[in-house]
Amino acid sequence: MLPEKLSIAIVEDEKVVCKYLSRFLEKEGYEVAVFYSGKEALEILPKQTFSIVLLDLKLPDINGMKILEQVKAFSPNTEVIIITGYASIETAIEAIKKGAFHYLSKPVKLEELKSLIKKIEDKISLKEENRRLKEAIARYTFADLVGKSLKMQKIYRTIMKVAQVDCNVLIHGETGTGKELVARAIHYYSKRRENPFVPFNCGAFTEELIASELFGYEKGAFTGAFRTKIGLLEAANKGTVFLDEIGEMPLSMQVKLLRAIEGKKIMRVGGVQPIKLDIRIIAATNQDLRKLVAEGKFREDLFYRLNVVSICLPPLRERKEDIPLLIQYFLKKYNDFFGKKIKGISKKALQCLLKYPFPGNVRELENIIERAVALSEGHEITIEDLPQDISEFEIMAEGETTPFSMAEQEKQHIQRALEVTGYNKTAAAKLLGFSRTTLWRKLKKYGLL
Image 1 (cartoon, rainbow, N blue to C red):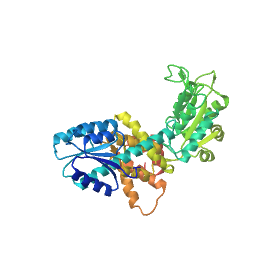
Image 2: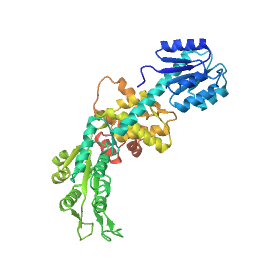
Image 3: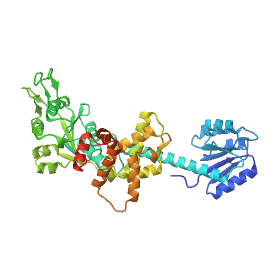
Image 4: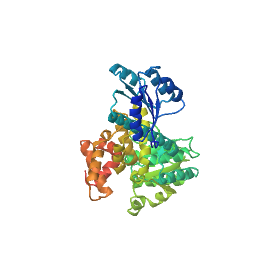
């Protein structure tokens, strides 16, 4: 947000020029102060902050370059436009190196001056918006979760409550909504925080590998078992185990997991001695487990053991007010990673992202910002820095006269991602913010295999 009236100081010894410029600027709605000498300007400028200073380089008492240096020293955010009748490339470069915003030669063209001031206004507006967003991020960031929406604030409160109660938790949410971040937050704020947090993706392994990874095995239990391996459940003792995509776990493994939860002990593959466990289990799924229970694909008793407390994460399209905050958060993250200094995002690019449905949710937005920061050569992300399929979606959406379902939007988006990546499923999954397992399931669902 800009102040109601931008304040502009004119430092110029020619009274005719001062009158000419001040009359024009006041008519445009700016507050104007005039100084006819460098000494007069330096008496007031340190005490009163101006948004813009129009500075003549050739003054009768003090060199304009010295005034520029002092203005930038005591008021770094004040933008200085050099005005002089002694124009040269050398002096222009020197002035800009010392912090001048731009350089105009006399006689000043009012439209050119007006255009420069508009650019400064945009710069001030962007700085203010970034400052406001940074303050909001500091206020609305919770254990790497970012959001000021009422839905996210409610989730933060739930996390703090459930963290204090040592019970199992089931987290529901679409792919990319931040289920693991919620699990980590619960662990971090619990009494188990000093002990391990062990994540495991149930959809990424075969049944045999799940057994060996979760329960471990004894030396000689099977061909290739040359040494004893401690399973993840045992490694997480006194800590938290996060079981992602729990709906993908085979039924036979569900039985073993249920037995471990109820008995609070496990048996390594090929082992004969039970091992006591003290763990908290947080499970997550993007599927409807109640429906899977009804279909006989998920054990009802295990469902109730896991679903002591349920947390449902909203998709990004249902909390779009959080998108600007998330963009700023990821900008900082990837500015630091790539060594960039991108200050913000253009209004057009932001509007494009606000219209986009984000089937890959926050993870997809992060991938978009990471790509944009890596490729951008300017001080802000523009619509040209966004993936082609995102900008194409905006054009399509603007030309759309009838609404279509989220499923149809997601199908078309997946199809475009496949086309953009030359049908490379790994690359398409990364672009979409999906895991390969989730992408495969959606390809099957939409008949795109």
